Image (cartoon, rainbow, N blue to C red; front, side):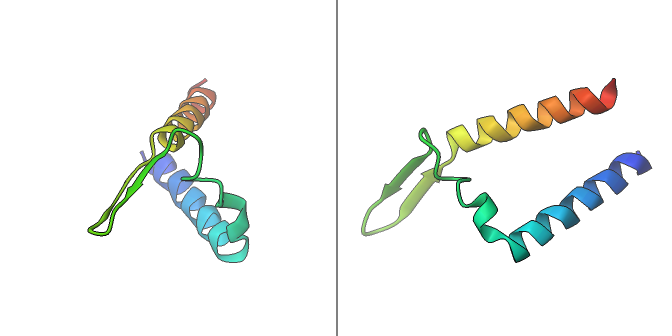
Length: 68
């Protein structure tokens, strides 16, 4: 369990550094075809379906690689 927490911490630090120093690397996230955006004068709704499928696939691949 401790190993997974260390790996998660390192991943979060790397993600934070990427967002701070190179924000253009993740500009595509949330703007993929299939992500639903609906804006009216009273509010906004954003449902990132395609982006979450991409995140799920990447995490599944990474977890399968680490568990072998």
